[in-house]
Picture 1 (cartoon, rainbow, N blue to C red):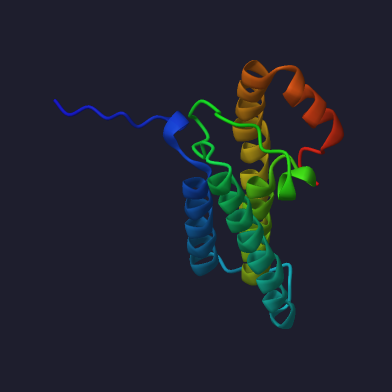
Picture 2: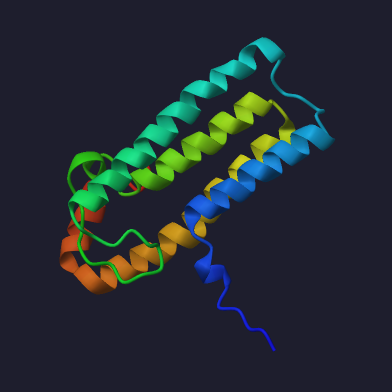
Length: 154
């Protein structure tokens, strides 16, 4: 018998973003209508896509410089509060959400916008909520002080 260690807990946010992006592409290919953006305006989606990728990569690099755990489901090792994390408690998720929004704009389809919204809701209600509980348990008052002074998103 083959068993798997896969579970919803193992679905990392970048993997979810790739699944959402693939679903957007599939939805656009199979059901390109209704479109909420005319063709000339869809290229504007490149801007939030590029900014989102840049923000997520920069925040990831900041975690690497701090030598802290990046895996959503691993035990947090350090509380990072400077740089991008001074502006947002979740710049990686903000970046991925901007990227999803950019992909939705590029597609222009209603289905893509709905998928981008679903991504943001899952990130906010599942990943961020889980991480915040872990950070509160690990860092206590230091995290509470940080959370009061820095917004969850922007």
